[in-house]
Image 1 (cartoon, helix red, strand yellow):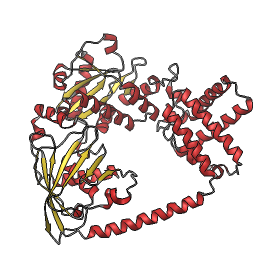
Image 2: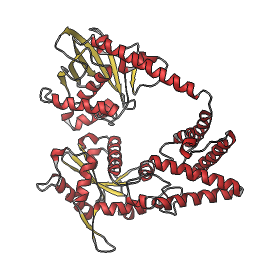
Image 3: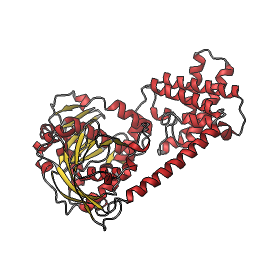
Image 4: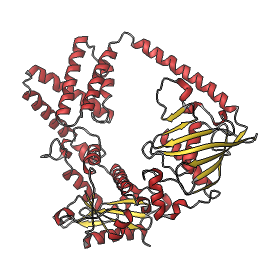
Length: 518
């Protein structure tokens, strides 16, 4: 993919532009980008499809720039009726390399200016009160832009042209000679064309599978068995609203409940024969490059486990044990909740500092001792403006808490949802690590604990950001090193916001993070 950028933008992004052939520059895979106020606007030069990214000053590091572009483009595709197969393919194939060039044609300049006017001009169609996402902004711009079809001369919207491009141009590597849209192998999509072609897609898939089986000198009886098994399982996937590739473990549930689904009783030999047929289906998917080796292993493992559990004499016993464990967990949670209520009257003052960053970026918070540790992490991350797109870990030096809660064998000892801030005393220090790639590290020090009977529950009541310094972090910028490089171009990163005015906004961010992680 080639991204054509203006010279001033290239300098801003710290990239090294180089020339590219004119035929490559004019291809549909070529994009132009312009910095416009608080936005970066990407435009596909052939399709006029806009991709919007806010706050271009954040992308002085080219790695963050590329990451942001990929993220926003994938999000835009998710808003459009694009089959999931194609989104996955674009993510893995189209973004392997990105090159930069200085060349920018006059037609590309006009498209960029047109979108800049629609986005920021006095007659902008954008309803800013709705707080649209970047993908929604791009869709509104595309819906307000009419183009002339070069073949027919008819007027069409950008969305219509792009949908036609998606249907015709993106292809599966396994079938480069065919349109992937007609061989989507039952990927689910809201696209009307996919719904209309569902029967044709199934026929093409099974025809490919029959050819595969025949070429391996299978007997007619075995071919019929394997084709029937594949057709029935794919029908089951379609009924569940997912694709065979989207959930490799779905075959486990299919086998576990096979008799109920088909209203039959299966002998052990018949079930094993079905398992053999499904394993052959997995080999076909791997042969077609639709399964990786890891995908194949997981699929085959799910088949074997489904058959074993279907005939397990301990099935009822396992269900009873599961119910018993759930009851025990519920009792433990109730006991923990009772313990958390004891901390309601304690008002904690915390100082949270972003480690390895200068000038110092920190926050002072006052929260209830009945604040559950996962909520405390949301409050801290929200105060530093993290977007919640990564895992985090909280440590007190002895215990490590993660979210999501992973099965570690330590029982509730490391369950972040069963521990409260009230378990700690003045002088205690905790460490919060967010995003194990960029490794943002926050040092949390308990400054003081005061009795305050009116401080209520473990939610947001009574929680407040008292003071601090610095605007906050920027996700996917390369950690503190990338943030300091960005701050050298954008002084606002080190500018302290008015916390008194931003309390409500902070509370909304906490709620958003809670929803994301839940």
